[in-house]
Image 1: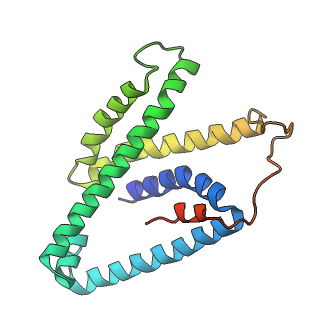
Image 2 (image 1 turned 60 degrees about the horizontal axis):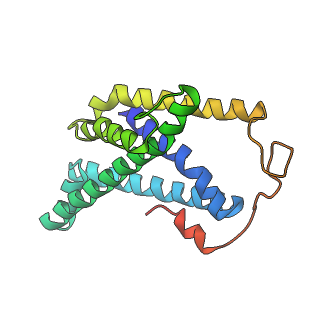
Length: 193
């Protein structure tokens, strides 16, 4: 559904874009984002045209039709590994961030201040959600995720303008050493596979 797609794109962008711009610098980072947008749009248009022409609407069916049954099965394995990797990444994000939230805001004690507790909680919550058959079944959890991402972004912007983010050695709110153009091997870390 549209809500799920928007939630995935916005959530991934909020997590990935700051790191990508830090590792690649501003000008190459923006160029990479624009190139990836064009490549993604082009590939989606091609997939849509192929699906309409063949009347096959899953990646597996398209790959089986174009290549072989083995290619279709291989894609399912790759898709499972990718999805499982995203599940592990989100569980790690929860495990890394929740202990400080619990201790700073709620003054919570063990086990709520332990990362392993939140890793298990993240796995218990995310695994059933990632096992659903229909994407439409994730509608409400996606809406909750999108609202959460919006809330975190709003808090970040508000805290920035309230002056709660300071750069060491710099009394102003803004960093003075923003790398506008810098080419390094780290630029390859930001290009999605």
